[in-house]
Image (cartoon, rainbow, N blue to C red):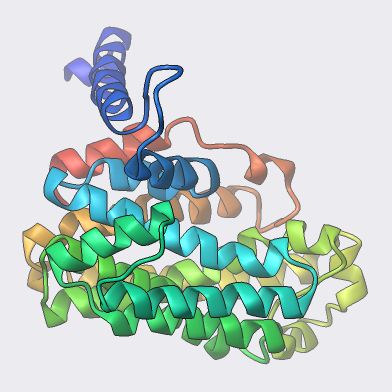
Length: 315
């Protein structure tokens, strides 16, 4: 019988995981009280607080890539939050334009004195990160300020490609991986994450009176915006979410199907598949009721699952 099939084996595995993650946490997060936070620490704190699942995956990147990856993730958090945190469009546009200017200054070697900008400047210099991917993220977020609705699922995938996939490409570059097969896998993963993020955010947006589900699918399944805003849990709503989640699953499978062609040095960039596979499994168990409160709970098994995937060096 395997040691992991007994309670002692599981306790041992949890212990190993806790030691591994806690050491990384102390090294890259935990500064002593009263000690000034470094720019690197501040970037890591941003990701830990607002993008916890990617924080876990980024902790397990090789040391040579980790600092750059946290800077990229922190940048993404800052850009992604603009729409949800700023109610005035003009103010949101000002923040978008600030980041456009910041990007230009970074690539001119004159970054503004902000933690994320300074860390990005170091990452750009060390790993030759491509300006086009940063620019594409900013542009997509800016366009989203004007038109926040999706007419079909293809538009959701396109948005995921421009935002999530672009970040994936930058993470690959942080690993010094430039490979067409890795890029293809990163593209499929980005589209999948874009769809899953849309699903996961339905309750949050509904509470604010907003609905961003694809219009054509809502019409197809006979679900109105008012029903979503009221937290519809009827069969038609579940069928709608099932349809959307199925496409996310197909994109994840497409990414994984390229595994044999992707360099193993790129595998750490795809640890984010773990959290998204976990959510799809959870919503399936909830019978695609997106308003099931259990879906809002943090998955306590996730750190171990990601670590095991890292240990096996696969995705």
